[in-house]
Length: 304
Image: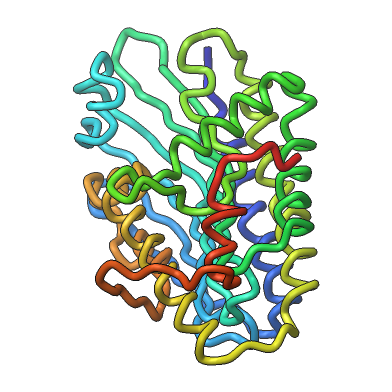
């Protein structure tokens, strides 16, 4: 089959523009636009905000890269495709609010195509979104998961949603800490690679997840943006952000693929929070709001 990369790219670039417009309207500050080209083929557009009115740091990145051979992270994941040319494109975002009562959020939607002369292209879609609160609110987490569920239900029903929800819980897990990064959401990958999902369904689900992002996140931060906070809350936020950094640098396949494929480092590492702290063997005070995050939120639950 012919994979319409032009239509996919048009969707991804349009999605980036719509999300940035929504975030700018919320924050009141304009994102910086930074176009770039990749040696060897491709490039992208990075949209970044730093020291905004609400967002301490955030980025919404579009990239479209290509090459003559799969990077190590991709060939290890799909060894049968080693040596093939590839094209990969997608939108990836991470937003770090300044207010500790407002959660960090991540969303990614992507498409990968492996090419070889005389052979049909092998394509697949992946993506998802997940929420990382510092102080948990059940209403916020339930809203986020309910919106994720609504995005998936037309493309496989309850069973498919539960599969992607559980996949997210497994993926965004720090094995060396034996704890989840946050409260999860959705994660899917290799959608279409096995031949069981047709192109229209895979692309449709990917669009549905991307289109759901603003509805999933903006109502949460609208509720919490004016909550008062002090040095204690900021200190805990910086400590928990350390977990975010650990996951992205040790486990995240997108980060590894970007660096191994010769992507633009500034754009790949835009996900890093601006202020982070680590402590030796720190434990939250029993009965505190910080302890509640671990006891009530950093545990798998059927939030939706």
